[in-house]
Length: 148
Image 1 (tube, one colour):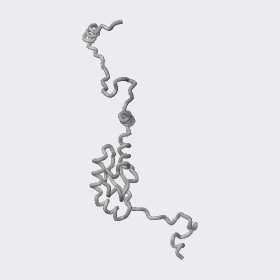
Image 2 (image 1 turned 90 degrees about the horizontal axis):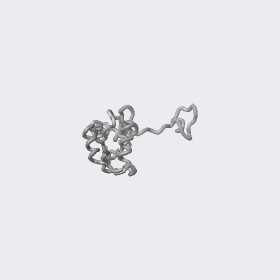
Image 3 (image 1 turned 45 degrees about the vertical axis):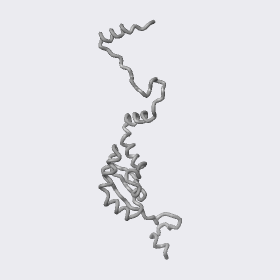
Image 4 (image 1 turned 60 degrees about the vertical axis):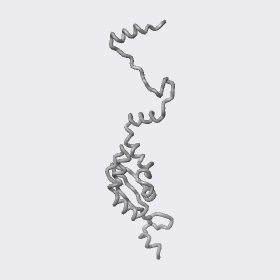
């Protein structure tokens, strides 16, 4: 059966119904593959993952966010309730980062939109524990017992 375009136009004009045609320049047919980036973005939007992804990007893009020199001497550890914990490799670096804390926080917030970082906690390196290990004695007073 032939299609009468004049009648279809008359009916759409009379009922003021217009067909909506999906105009997607990337996909001409339904069977064509869709770019994976757009699929992942739509999933992240629908499941409200934007904040978690933005916070995860802090860990993966740390050197780009704070710079190479700081990234060589400090690393992000955790994000808990809007507080980013950063571990420095020495106490002197921890002190320097505490002095730069405001600028560092502004830099993190500006380069990582969507991540809710409200404060920074900068810690130094952790000391070794003498409580556990191969040469410990239960009930002993600690490292004083090993040095005679």
